[in-house]
Image (spheres, rainbow, N blue to C red):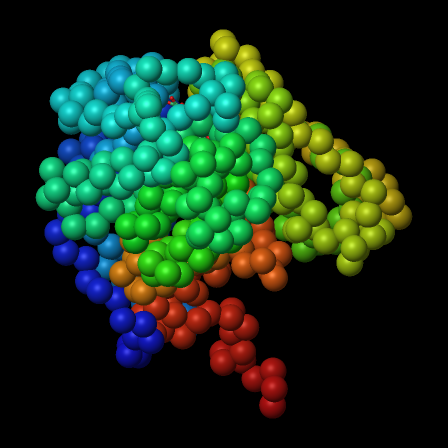
Length: 442
Ligand SMILES: NC(=O)c1ccc[n+]([C@@H]2O[C@H](COP(=O)([O-])OP(=O)(O)OC[C@H]3O[C@@H](n4cnc5c(N)ncnc54)[C@H](O)[C@@H]3O)[C@@H](O)[C@H]2O)c1
């Protein structure tokens, strides 16, 4: 039986803008994919918002609408893309350069991609060492750049007749930074912008600009960016959703699928060695130790949280976990991720599992960006603000409230996401006990 919604959601109307700082492999694969799907040339595989369904009520009710219809998401035709990059290449040129999609596939949507031209980036080689470009805002302070980004967003909306905008960070991974005094309050941060404080990275300037305008901001890279008290305060002040960080694709996706299985069956894990070779621009950036450290922190956390070595010292107390990423140009975007997993079972007898995932990072990341953009917009329309923990499903290192530990188990994350959608629409949240069908308790 349908129930009254607990949350009032402003219905979608008009057009929605998806803006990405960074118009590289992930971003252009998203754009080309959405354009191809719109033309009926492909299916949106991997996207929950496009292909997912959601069970409502009891199993016997047989109610399972698509998520898109259930919560009222925009159509793909309603989306307008835009972005910023340090290179002037339009989305077609950038996609060709990224080498993820075949030229043939790109040519089917060439005209539309060519029309997507990046705005000038806020960038400094202090934060991304391996890249430099010429399409960059210059001559101002960080404060000036924040104002310019806000002006970019406003003109994008006006030029494209767009009602709402969402920003998803798809730019390069910045060097490892830790929170400092300048990140503790809005006042300190604004002063820091004016003083060009080195602890303020470009991604933080984009995030600040977005939140100031009430534009939802999701962070697809492992940078600190939105994980700061200043951003949380600003998000509350302007009633804006934030989410992050680091898209969960490739090897970490596999880890968060497998580790919950080992733990469920109480199988021990003594070692997990993960190595990657990749040859895209992301790989080149990660070849710099400072950017790699940012990534490494994000990748290492998942096993500890899922396996809980403090609770299960006999099974996971001595786990040796190592992650390596090597830049290897011949592979381009087609990464190879090897995992050697040493597990042990009954009477400590050892076993090994080897995974060799010949994956395509941007093919896995593109639907995540689409889902995040549409769900962040839904969150905004539902009046949700601050950290959107229910979108942890999409991230390697989910941002959560300071008193919480992140949940990395993909199955719990999925339940949480779907239950949040049920909650929004006033449907019963699913517990899967199924006790109604049997007479256990008689
Ligand atoms: N591909 C994946 O599966 C995956 C998974 C998790 C996270 N990520 C992260 O997503 C981001 C994008 O990945 P990608 O493969 O598209 O990388 P990419 O190198 O192809 O694209 C990044 C783009 O960002 C631009 N850029 C750098 N700094 C910028 C700035 N300050 N402002 C605007 N543009 C800027 C670069 O010029 C480049 O075109 C990376 O940080 C990566 O670590 C990707």
